[in-house]
Each structure stands twice: as structure tokens, then as C-alpha cells.
Amino acid sequence: MTSFLRSDRSRAVAIWLLAVAVLVLGMVVLGGSTRLTGSGLSITQWKPLSGVLPPLNTTFVWFAVRREIPERLFWRLGVLFVLGGLQGLVGWWMVASGLADRVTVAPERLMIHLGLAFALLGALVWTALDAWSGWARRTLPSPWGRWALVLVGLIYVQILLGALVAGNQAGLVYNDWPLMGGRLIPQDYAGASLWATLAHSQGAVQLHHRLMAYLLTLAALAVGVGAWRSPYLAQDSKLLAAGVAGAVALQACLGIATLMMSVPIGLGVAHQLMAALTFSLAVAFAWRVRRI
Image (cartoon, rainbow, N blue to C red):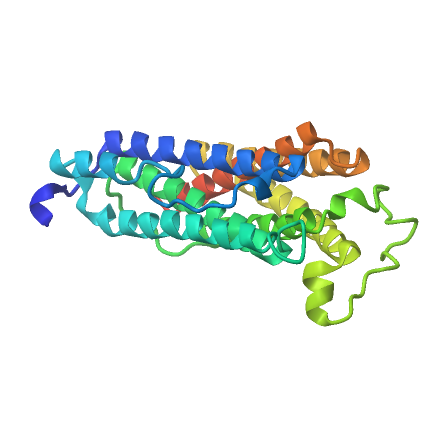
């Protein structure tokens, strides 16, 4: 196997992976548009061989034959293959939940589907950056490396909470801000059970998404300011941190506008696109601060 691999780096592979990341981002936006227009349940067949999948097969063989794939990244490409295939399977599982006894997909299945898409997006961005830059000496675990990963985690959790909001169509209720129907806690917060509250209560999922947005915005601004003032970080790391902080703040404002206007399609799609861009920036920042 190793005769087909190169051990350092490949910018051609990096460009390929970034192109696939752009396609995944496009699929995320297309999926959001499909959901907002209510056309998703018109697609009732899953064709994993002939359907739309990122080019992770023929293009991979081409790079392998040309010995363009860095050996240390080979196993990661296997993980990307698995995530891509699993994404298609979960997509059908999600759609299937709307074909019986309901006219919308199950919110928790939408959350898993979107979560896998963003996991794939993050893995593509990280692996592409590694392929572009080649092997590098790693720093010892540092507070910046940990804080950057915490920020990625918070953004990811917020995306999952946003999926529950979308799945429950919770953006169509409580369109005032900062209160919810004139209250700090919506009147219909509690569901019939803990799971019903966490996953199916419109008031609860919107409140959780709001609260996480406040926490995430404060955390992103704190990391951004701290990184900018740090004498230990390179200038490009500082710029990435500032970019993440700015993107999170912009996304929060966009979310408020989307909510208060009852989720028009244009703003809803922009909100989802901004989430993907913010997550990608955070992944790039986390990758950069772990390198000398």
C-alpha cells in the first residue's frame, strides 16, 4: 500500500479536499432551502451509487495512482469515506421519518443528519490544511489549543440545537426578542417528558438555542480578544481568532433578524450558510494554534 503514497504533503490533494468541503457546504445550504420550502419529502428514494455524493472515490484513485496522497493522512481519508456514506444513509433515515404518521421529518433525525454533515465538513477542512502544509512540529498542549477546541465544540453544539429549532419549526413562534412571548421562559416550555421537552417542545428548543447563542458569543469574543493580545500567537492565528469572533457576532445578529422576521427563506438560508462558514473558520483556528 505504501508504494502508492507520499509521506510529506500534497497541495493538489489539499485543493481536492477543499473543493469537496465546498460541495458539502453547498449540500448543507441546499438541504436548508429544501426544508424551508417544504420540498424535502418529495425525494423518497435513496440511491447511494447514483445519487449526489462528494467526489471521494474516482478522484481518490487518481491521486493514489499518482502517489499524491500523504501517507500520514491516508487513514483520515478512510474516515471521510465512512462519514460520506453514513451521511447518505442517515439522510434517507431522516426523510423516512416524514413518510409515515407525519408530514415533517423527526427533529432528532434532522439533528443527527446535520451533525454528520458538519463533522464531515470539519474533517475535510482540517485534513486539507494538513495536506497543504505538510508535516510540522507540534507544540505541547497549550491553553490556546484547548480553548480553540472548546470554541469548535460550542459552535457544533449550537448547530445541533439549531437543527432542533428547524426540525420543530420553532422559529415560527416567539418572534419577539429578547423576551419570548413577553416572558423570560416561554409558557409552553415543558413537554410531557424530559425528551419531549429537549427535542420536541418549540418553546424549549428555541430557548436553548438562544441561551447557547449568548454563551457562544461571549466565549468567541473572549477568545478573540485574548488571542489578539497574546504575545505567543502568530499573526495569522490572531487574525483567525478575530475572524471567528466576528463571524459568531454576525451570526447572532443574523439569527435574531431571522427569528423576528419569522424565518424568510433568504435569511434562513443565509443563517445556515453563516453557521457553516463560522464553523470552518473555528476549525481552521484550532488547527493553526496547534502548530509552531
